[in-house]
Image 1 (tube, each protein chain N blue to C red):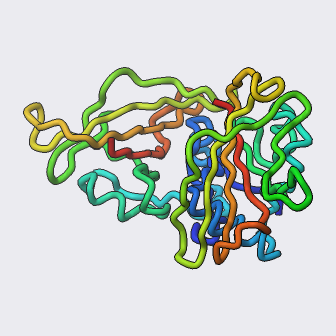
Image 2: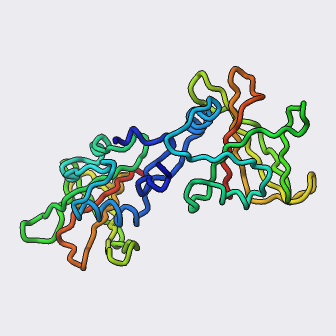
Image 3: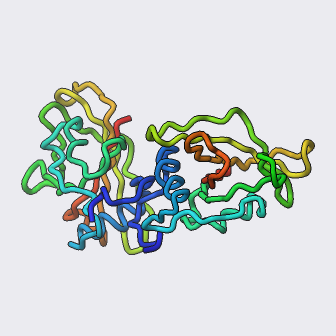
Length: 151
Length: 151
């Protein structure tokens, strides 16, 4: 079953709760879903304008969803490497707690893309929401789900 | 297959083109769809606040979809009876042509619900979009699809 077999009129518009409590949780637990909706992509290997082509969902949505394993900046450190070939993603605001089932604890970080090199890059209109699952507060090891919007 | 078997995160947000060119066209042609998404309801037998319960789609959407055969005001006339027990639906603005495949011609009428008796009813916040298929410009005989929004 592929996404093209979905009935006309259905759009993938998940709530944060559904993204984390269903899709990300199943991915981290090694369980599949009926449809292979969200591809695994090494996000920072691409500039944001190259990401829409990697999406499995219809192109007319201006929002795309990917799983991405965390990429450490330093082998033993906790910082995530967020540089791409043409720029970098920079967090904006505070991480927000996602309310879902009581057993699942997750955070959402919002990032904006800057073209150029930090700290002098030029802010662009690409926004990413990064969701990470922090089971039992051990947040180090999870993959995360990302939705990228072009605003 | 029922709507509850849809994957999390999918919402029914059809474009006018999809509603008319797929759902209404198939209904009028006597063809089914994989999911029985849109019930046939005698719309004017109900007041708008009784309609959401008739929907097959999840209750959290504030938009509902129904098929309704046209109900003539007079046996030989073309006027549609739009009175309900507590009020009436009144058209607002002009009918709009729906752009879909070249072989399908359809119109969208927007109506607002008034409580009480015409012309002195009180305008309420229920809006209906009525789609009617007019194949070969013989618009008399088609069923129509309706989406009702509470605004």
